[in-house]
Structure formats: C-alpha cells, structure tokens
Image 1 (cartoon, rainbow, N blue to C red):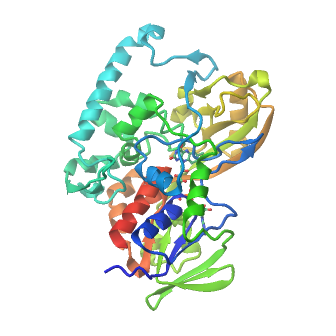
Image 2: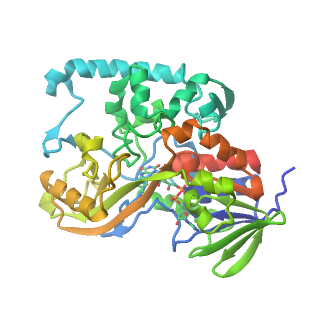
Image 3: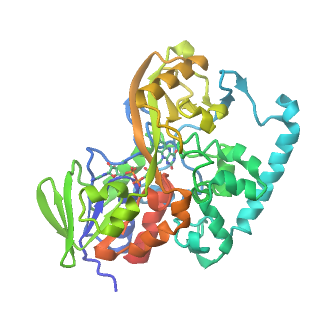
Length: 452
Ligand SMILES: Cc1cc2nc3c(=O)[nH]c(=O)nc-3n(C[C@H](O)[C@H](O)[C@H](O)COP(=O)(O)OP(=O)(O)OC[C@H]3O[C@@H](n4cnc5c(N)ncnc54)[C@H](O)[C@@H]3O)c2cc1C
C-alpha cells in the first residue's frame, strides 16, 4: 500500500528529476523535494538567449515517439512550436554532397540499393529476432529477457524471454555484421555519432537500438522532428513552474547518509530528513558525497561517458551557412576530434549563432585536449567555408554515461536494477536508460510506476 505522505528527495532538476516529480505528483505524492545544484533547471537541456531568441547548447530535438515528453507537454500546457529542422551534407573538404541520391552517386548505386534492402531487413529483424528490444531501460537484456512497456502511445506492459537479446551487448558494428546488415550503419550514424553518442565499434548495440528504434530512425530520415521555439530548456522550466513543489536551486549537497530507515541529506550546510531518495545526478560521482556501499562503488566506477564539445559561434552574415550540415566522413573513429555536424537553428535570420559538435574521445585512443579539439573545429568551419568570427559560448559536456560491452554482458544492469530500493535509494537518469530527454523521462515514469 503506497504511503502518499512519504518525504521523497530527488537529486537533480534535469528531465529525469523533474519528470520524476511530475509522475509522483500525478500518483498523489505531494511531499517530494527536487534539489538542483545549478541556478536553473533543465540540465543538458540548455537554451541560452542571443539577439532576442534562444539557441541550443544542449538538447535540440524530439520525435513523435517521445511519449514521456508528450506527457510533460500536456501537464505543462506547452507545444513543440519551434523551427522546422532540415540539413544537407558536406564531405570533409567542404564540398556539398548528396550521399543518398542515386543520380548523384552513379558508382555507388549498387551500395545504395543494398543498403535499402538491409534497412528493410533490419526493421524485420528488430521486430522478430529481437522482439522486446525497444522497451525503455535495460532490465534483463543481458540475460535474454525483456520486461517493461512497449514503445507505443498506449505503452502496454510486456515481458518475456528472448535469448537473442543477449546479442545487444556487443558493439553495434559487430552486431550489424553478425546480422548481415552492416550498411544500416550509414543511416544510423547520423543521429547517433554526430549527436555525441560515440562510435559504433565501441558502443553496445542495446543503447543504439533502444534510442534509435526503427520508428525513431525513420523519423530522423524524414526530418519528422520536434523543436521548441524557446528551446528544450523551456520544456523543463515550464514543467517546473507547474509542479506543486518547484525545484530548489543552488543546492550544494555535501553528504547523504542512509541510516535508521531514513535518508539524511546535508544541503547548504543543513541536514534534511527524508524517507526515500531518487538520484538522477551522475551515479559515477555519488561515492564522493554518499555513504556509498561497496556495490555502489564497484558498479558505478564502471560508468564511462563521452567528451562532447559544443561551440556557439557567430559568423559574418555572408559566411552564415544556408542550412545545417552533416559531415559523415568526420563521424568515423579515425577522424575523432573533428567537426561532425553544425546546426543553423533559425533559417529566417543570419544574425544568430550556429552551434558545432565534436567528440574528442574514442576507446583505445588518447583523449584529445579540449583546446586542440576546439581549434580543429574552428579550422574545419573554415574548410566548410562558414568561418566563425567569434565564439560566444562553449561547453564540454559530461555526456551519455554508459557501460562498455563486456560490463553490459556481465549483467551490470541486472545488478543495479536489483539494488533499486535498497537503503531507500532509487537510481534514475541517463545511465539507467539512455542519454536523451525522452528515455530519461520515461525511465522516471516507470520507476515511479514500479516502486511508488
Ligand atoms: C549537446 C547536446 C545535445 C543533445 N541533443 C539532444 C536531443 O536533440 N534530443 C534529446 O532528446 N536529448 C538530447 N540531449 C540529451 C539530453 O539533454 C539529456 O539526455 C537529458 O537532459 C538527460 O536528463 P537527466 O535529467 O538524466 O540529466 P541532466 O540533463 O544532465 O540533468 C541532471 C541535473 O542534475 C543536476 N545535478 C548534477 N549533480 C548534482 C548534485 N550533486 N546535486 C544536485 N544537482 C545535481 C545537474 O545540474 C542537472 O540539472 C543532448 C544533450 C547535449 C549536451
């Protein structure tokens, strides 16, 4: 029997924490507190102002299958009312190309036809051989089970055995080769690697296909995308405004102690008592301020993350790109540290910033220093014939926390899921599902559904 009076502490005022608050509130819980360390909510949904508009330093877009984000929109009374997205392609030398247009790639027609066939086959394999692949979170996958909610508007509860799901722990490249669909990587790479989620030779297939399930990928292909006029940050600001308990900002949490069936949180020097705690901040760092158990220390030390660098740059009006560009050649591991995509958000105005995206780590290679990567990206912009005149904002994000294939296969998620609720502690946020707005919000929905 749920005790709706429980005092629940939520660490983090990003999509995971705020949506946890929303789903708790929808269930009747009113006694929750969201503690955010920054002076604003939104986390990696970060939309600063420039010239009377907002641009994106963090999350940019959604797709129609973002059902949890849709819940948030309904709750907060907002709509995806932003500019229509579109993009073209350049090669690494700055020449405009049309990689998917057969008439522009006569030599590549056989490959394009083969790719089309493989995409169709991949869609069928995902539905049949990998049935259950697209439910939120990773519970049971490494043991060949699925258990959760279907990725459909009705989110029906489904569960079952499917030993083939164990294949999802292998890197996506190997997974595609094993299934004879290696050319689908040409399509999946755009919204994966350039969006900072790492390279296909290193990232377990589970992350790739759970985020880029077939339906979502086709939405990207067709540019059937959602954006928000005031930026993705405004989604979470508006949600925060509607919650009965708004996030408390500028919270410096120095200690979390779990004893006597309670959770004691030291915030800005004061000890607060709670019944339960939901952690949505990076789990990797909780041993720094939690009375972490040995299991927590061992498991969370296995988390890795991407070094994903974003620059917001001004250009002279005559140098402003006419549209956003993908540079596929720079999405290969050999070109890590180069500009992979640059984004023109406002098509009706040249006096806005454009944002650039680069990854500067790849498993087995040395991490590229931040300043070196920044210089490479600015040089790449010159090569693209869209040189920057000034950098107005920059960030290197702690991005897409995840575990590697070996750790995934060894049952990392089963162990962490098995710890949910121990010491009145619950884990949510990016690493528990995937590093996008919807997967994190959806995970919070399920967490509330399962345990509260
Ligand atoms: C450049 C970029 C592009 C992206 N593009 C997209 C996109 O197009 N579509 C999409 O869906 N997603 C995108 N994302 C990913 C998306 O923004 C994240 O996956 C999502 O914000 C994760 O939500 P979260 O709440 O789990 O984590 P976060 O957004 O990281 O929020 C965590 C919150 O916890 C707070 N916090 C951390 N430590 C503490 C502490 N000790 N005490 C209190 N508070 C703490 C942080 O300040 C933060 O507010 C993008 C992200 C970036 C950076």
